[in-house]
Image 1 (tube, rainbow, N blue to C red):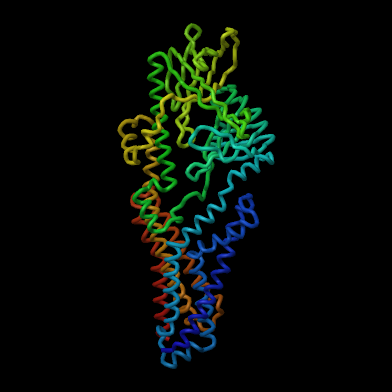
Image 2: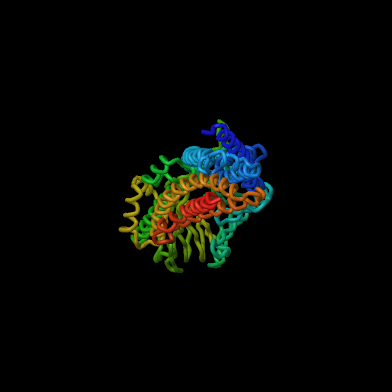
Length: 568
């Protein structure tokens, strides 16, 4: 066996493959970091860390091109120096000459398989966490610079922003991670499809509170002395305390690429472990709780009187400083009693109707004592989900012919449309629902709440996400295997093409192997997209053959090129 020749070819291929991989990975990683860097998500030091974390994740795409380049360059030089011809005259067949290429190819393919399944997931998670860990801080900087911030269908602008160091305490499941006080706030909510303005809020003061819940950042905005305008209804209302809240989108939060085969198998068996499914599960729980609350509200209104407790206010701007120096939340024992002669349901709200003789009446009691009464011809009870783990809350809005009586003075004054703030039902609704498994929740939604559009939509979204996750895991496993096989075969293809192209420049020869490698990766990724496309009746029957078709083309190209080489 010509071990000297084999060692020479093998180490030459190995060095060029390694060098080309490092260069390509670094260039691509820097290109990927440009956008996060421009958006302020990465500092100069984080840029270096991002490149280091991203480099291993790119090997699955870079190694086929690097391997094709290395084998083409090495064998073009061997062919130009007549070393292939000398080895052939000396009794070595072309298959024997290709042994070191096959050996390195098997090593590259095996390494890619191990990397993609057990090493790359860690680097995927690290790079994603590095980019999105300071999303809240980025928002703080934008608001502090008087720049409008868009997120979750909302646009926020403030004249002044001050970040507070002390986080206020509150008796709840989640504690804020950041607290910002704002002056001169404007919040617009836009329709996701049409882009039309759905509602606009203005406030003299507001508090922004950031939460971290199950790896997902959430933002609550507590408006003080707020005015709300809804163009679709021509509705204008005023409120002393108006809360808004939504999740901050994270494009890199959780992906199947972040998991090893064992973890993927666990997620397939228990899909609620996956964050996207967990979010849909939580949305279904909240939709069920909101629907149950609406039914309960309607039932009590039919009986004549509805009692609601006030939701603890999230206003830290007026919080008193405790002796220990911690800001405390103001707690008030306030409840409302509502009476309405008529009401109707519209989506996630109840519309209460009254008239001059029998208006809608709302009594506000503090510590058991009547404090204030409102009378109006029309009021709304809007039910919102709130933060994960919190009970759904109710926003009270008084719209037409509002008048208020303050007690014990009995002084009566007219008011414009008024937002009373958030209230809640006295009994918790979430614990029983959260204790149910995903399959039980879906069955409950199908049997008892099929009439609710919100619940049905949430259940369909959860089922769709579970189905797509199952398809995604299957397509990812095939993608990892196909890229590993492609990394092996392009090495052989580059060598065979180079031995066939005697007298041609190396870059011309490399163009052929480059295009084949590019076509293979395009087919693999395209097939992966088809394999988890839930719009198709049988996506894996379509996608999996496409994933492996690139390797079939590589094998065919190798066979044709070797047949031509063997004839010569």
